[in-house]
Image (cartoon, rainbow, N blue to C red; front, side, top):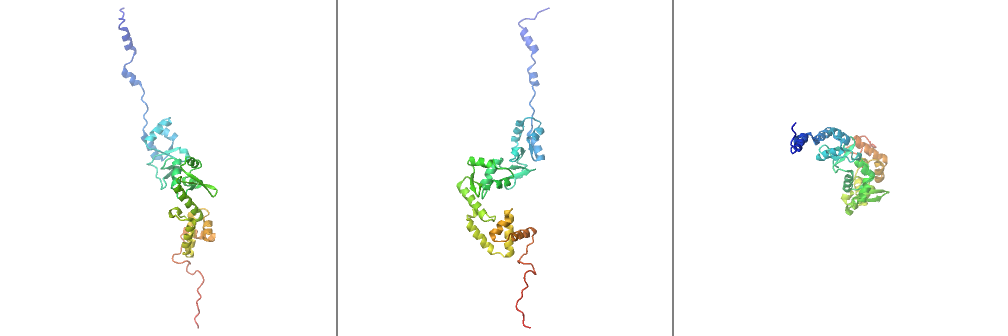
Length: 281
């Protein structure tokens, strides 16, 4: 048997055992490609979705993969439910306050709850008590409010045994405090801060106007302002205007039922029959 040349053996052995370069590259598995358009289509159909749902839709078990695709879509996270739900700006139809909800989940044009709370307080005419802001945002605000105060992004002032949250700017804060005092002293829905009026001046102006009204108009005015004040409005307006609480309630009910007499204060046939002087017989 003829032996191979020892000088050729190494190269022959190498060529025999090593696959060509193209076969090595061919066997490497390419990573799975995830398209953000899949998430867009799902959100357009369902409005909102949480992370587990989006992972199933995308076909991945990795949170980071979902967030990378959401970032390409300029997504929004809910400010309620601990930011657990997601949507797209093109889906949300924000109201005048920049809020939108779907199935009880709330989103803000501003993004986070912290940013939304800060802007709401700064733009409020009379500032906010915590419970008022919670009702406005449909969310708990007990944590973000003290946090913003600690960061000196909002101010907090004690009024009537509770904390009023205002803007940090001294001029804006003073206007908000004036509006709040006016609102508490005068239970009528007016923006005292924009009028630059003190509570006493505002009360005098309202009572002057009120004195020009007839009986029905006074009742209707009180009923209207009671509705705008909400719970307890009948008592507040009754005390302020010197009316019986039932009179305020009657005015409110007349407005709701559209039972208003135009051009006269009494119905035809109402009141006492005029007597006049009898003609001599």
